[in-house]
Length: 117
Image 1 (tube, one colour):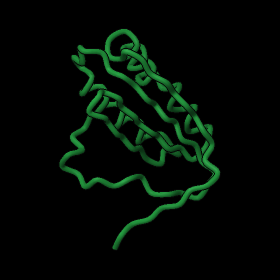
Image 2: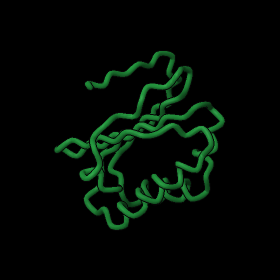
Image 3: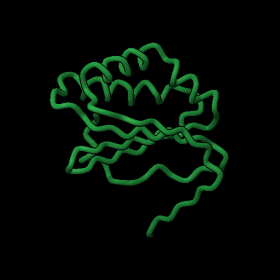
């Protein structure tokens, strides 16, 4: 994935509901050859989807990884799901990079944020 250590840590802002959140939680396999490059490419590619709002990432020292993508509507989420390059990366992930994963898609009905000034 991209090097988030250089960027300031900040969550995706709260948006006016409703919108959708796709929560991808994974445990990585030992061999991650090519994963970083593919993840960076997916991160760039999803930005071209009309209705993509942003994404948050978190990783635990124990190896759990969580990525949450936010989409304005179901059509935007469907466009991302059906993107051919994304589908190929998903297939490679199942074969090579993931020990296990779950995907949860939710319609966000409430959203708010806070930022210390």
